[in-house]
Length: 182
Image (cartoon, rainbow, N blue to C red; front, side):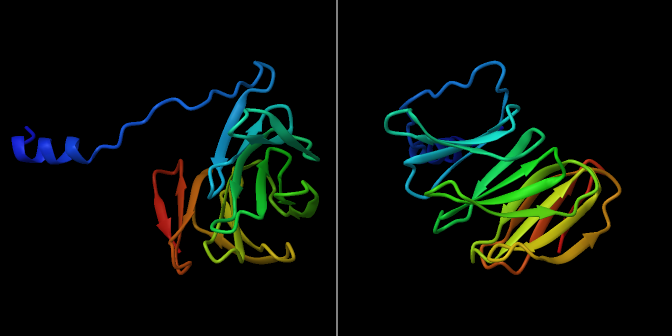
């Protein structure tokens, strides 16, 4: 049971949210992921149409479509706090690093044996972590796309990744029912 004091503190602190805009994907696109940039004026989405789309959140218009994957784009992230790069993870066993302004493909991270389902970038914008069905986490340089390390230990698909704010730890979660801190 929640105490009355705790209940009131919780609800006094709650910010109200209102729907600002709805952006629709077609049924064929099957949305898989999304992320906002630090200003909130750009939204990126991954989907089954093998692309990453960049949307203007003020108008709802499609700004750019990033194409080049040969499988579903399953996860998309900006590199915070600068948000000048977009990283995509795909069922084609690769990740790609894109310029967030021009949409130019900068690097293809090729090295997973099976589908890549999650990706993260450290807050220093230097390291990309990727994970997927091959049960390993791979660390890549955001700058040049080179493989830096392979982290092994999970016994099933890796489904989530997250860096600590200072970049000294990486969390990986797996369907093997474990979360590991590296």
